[in-house]
Image 1: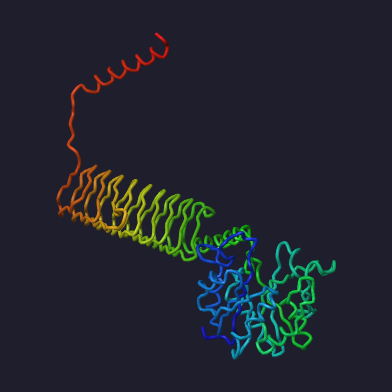
Image 2: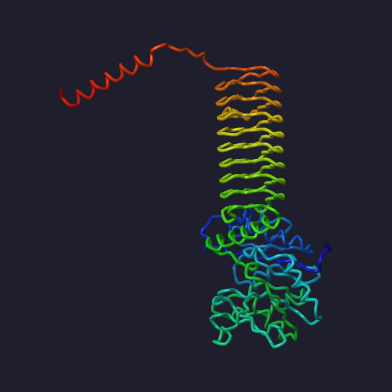
Length: 456
């Protein structure tokens, strides 16, 4: 998309005290991604000339996450109008209009920004486009009072509205597109002669109309302009995001037996004919190819699961896991930074970390790759067609050759050649009659203790 002749200002200077967090409000994650990044990703699709991020409290936190932005500081929080005023040096010499957004309103889609740009360009005399919406519960929001032809006449706060104005359900989102040639003169005309002593961005409507400019309204859905100011808001935003991701998965050919219990990350990629059972959680950076089955209560993060594989139930796949075609990861199996080739089976109660496993290898229940010595990590390599007996410990660095067999209960500390059998455990000894004698002796001891307690 070619660059539009606009710039974007993102306001993120508020302290966010209602979050009750040391983390800046706009950095709290939704679907595994900071809410600020949700917004900036949509802004980048718009390809503006420049994006300016206005910060205040905890500047360092926000600046570290402010990709593709110029950061300016609002040292004193004197209102939304003042927050845009401080961008003047950053926008010096930049032509075009200015779109003002909020860092805690993360879901506004690029197409809605495009609609605002189109509305601004509809007439040469449109100086301002305000983004409105119709919430289910409008009581707390400012109302957009429009003329019969749909132009915006004024914005009135709920507390200042008349009874008839309170019946209006078209509300103010706070976001707007402003004529770039007029923005700073209009801002300069604002007054802070009000109860809060602040400069309000909404007063630009009156400034534009006083200058004989038209003010238009574009309507958004309530979900698109959802603002986040508290943990309750954050939970609602997460639920909204997850609902959209679940619908996207279902529409893309994924079967979910209980969609409300499945949680996605912002970057989860899932192919067609995938089945996801209840209670599955996807962390960031997961790719699921076609025909995969994810069984109940599995947690997957940073993993690539290839066509036809089966995972779970109760499996945990950690970053760096690559599960091959038609492989099987069973119940209570944990895999980390390991590549499993086609047809590998790790069916029960195992830990596979820092490893490569060749095609069609079978890893028995309770097998562990001992990859850490307390200081460094080491790798285990298991060849194609190898069989690792149950309850084996493979002490890395170690290589098990193609087709090799490892006896159950072995502790393997040396390489095993291809097609060899390795057994590393204590020699079994059977003592005839020992169990019967043991039971008689112990029963007598127990009876004697019982008699002593009773004073016999």
